[in-house]
Length: 248
Ligand code: NAP
Image (cartoon, rainbow, N blue to C red; front, side, top):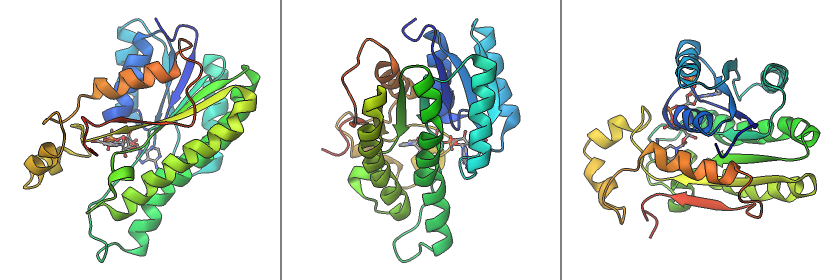
């Protein structure tokens, strides 16, 4: 119960990595706001799973492209769960295309969700965390932010930007006891990567890791628990790679 008494808001927690973090945070005693954009039914399933394991959770509509929706989502979560101590900026999207294929629309869509979203959510959550005497923000980045592509040009730039945003927000959070870090997963088996791993590049992607396998969602969730828990209080502004040594 390393997160007992804490309230965590996780964006994009209806499936994949966000869902896994939500379930693990709940196992560690946190009350969870399960954020989603379109998949209300799937978010409700995560809430039910948490309730079934004895935890407390609510599903909260929170499209990170919409500042007013985010403000309302945080107010709703704080009212229902008693405040917000931890924000996980997990919501993220990708599409594979080369540099020349990337359109303006692709670029704007990815940047809006992956980079502007965490900026807006971090700004809007500050007042909630200040009321609680501090907090933790964890940005879910990617190995792509350090590896730079090749078929995810806009995505790689958005995650490199997120790594920079992590340090900038850590600078502003420090005086409020808000610690801000990023976790950068390598290849994990989720809806976003299932096609890629099953396709012709799948073996090559796995071969690029030192550990020669895709990661487990639990590896990311465990790292997030460590960053969120009171047991550590001196790590801020960092990007923690959970990528099986892929960049090496
Ligand atoms: P996923 O399975 O595709 O799930 C994406 C989640 O983001 C869903 O819950 C979705 O909600 C939500 N989302 C999408 N657009 C949104 C928006 N505009 N506002 C709010 N939520 C939105 O993705 P994943 O693979 O778990 O990835 C989660 C994070 O990890 C992303 O930031 C991704 O870049 C990063 N990552 C993933 C991998 C990997 O191997 N999977 C590796 C490195 C980094 P709805 O279902 O409601 O639409």
